[in-house]
Image (cartoon, rainbow, N blue to C red):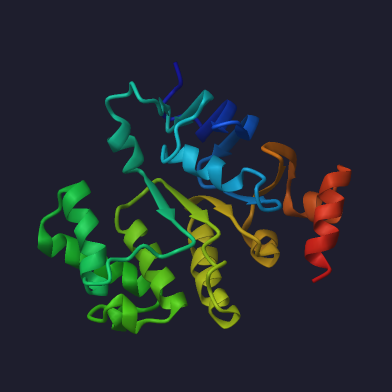
Length: 250
């Protein structure tokens, strides 16, 4: 049995995932320590997002095990929703309800999932909007905000649930270049606050600044992992070197 308070909050063991005949993950093993930031990089189709979605049980593994905070995610686990409630996820697209105000977008999940009273949920929503730097936008609707502001609302919504882990799936890839920094700045602040984070991103500057560990994936496998300095400045694998030469030359 896993120990609930072990230093690893995420443990992935021999994870395989098929979509029909396509194998997206090919025996991935990964541990993430509490309070650490892990950044996953790699070409499109390498399995990065699938791995992230398996951690949140949005995708069910074909084979292998995913453990979060000492509990195994599986279809048979009766506590699956309570485990997932500890995981915040921010997607490429913001997934905000367009007919609800910014404040109500953040209040809704707190009331439904966490069962909070309205006053408490509203107070927490205001606190998190302040944390991501857009407290003045509480009464606006998503359509009145820039993409960067909408993504910061999505981050605030996830944080309002008091998650133990935050997952980010290419949170800046749908944004205009001038909006990317404002979202990355929020993520950087979270990292400094000690939030456990697993981020799939193409933003190498963020990976260098925030990551405790960088993972390079290709064809459903972890090809290389290490500190940002080790992976970016002293890559060992030829596939990593080729990828970085293409990415970092732009």
